[in-house]
Length: 344
Image 1 (tube, rainbow, N blue to C red):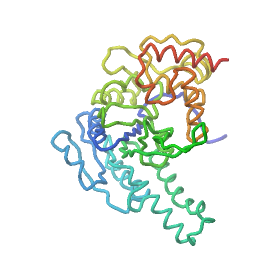
Image 2: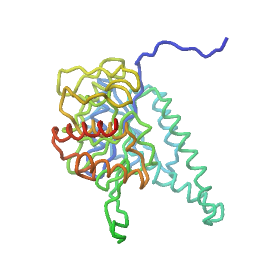
Image 3: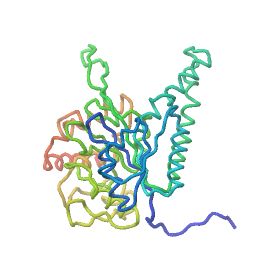
Image 4: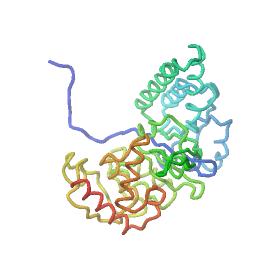
């Protein structure tokens, strides 16, 4: 008899991995602290600080233990620090900032450059020089997925531009468009990491703490209102969901249970919903989830263009930042059109 066994699936003691990316002034550290406090309740959480003790600025507002992570910021150093915090039984671990694992001293960009030089510094070895740093990053991510504590990872974001050829063949400069960015602001991290997490958000200095979804699944939408800053209440209800409770909407008494329909049937599955008849106002997160469901996500120039073409077809705009300004009625009409196009 095979030693591999099955039992009925229950959502219980689910580990959470939340990502918050933002520029200076976007409120990412403060938001992470608020979220951690809500999840941890009366128990202290911990913060792994890579920024020379800046997290201590919030010591008067939140109850947490602090640890400095110093360079070199190799993936293994992050994994070991998080493992130590998990072994110490902290309910929530905040890491501020995780961007150093990518672009900090000794991070994977430095690791790649060191490998490149060791291998002779020739163009022919450039791809091979990524094998070791990318392998170390993947190993670190796999270790994160085994952590029992809830993890909140903060990432810096930077504004980027790119040069592209327009329809007339002329080169023009525009804000860089990526699957994880918004209006040119891009998280500083390995490009796939935000999608490894339970949920991830971009925060902007123009609206500190207000989440713009990078990854936000259907069952978590009620917990993160997109028109107000992330709060302790979001953390409290997120922890309740992780323990096996229903996802109660923040700011409302409505209870929203995760969809139980099989994949491909009804609005809760991954197939095409038969109709769009929401019981609440349509949000940009609804549109984002549908776009990803129908294959209009991912990176690369071709994928970005397909996404922009689809946005233009259903909403009359090509940028995601413009979608965020649309009213609920316009979003609902566009979402109906998106479902119809997917069924066609």
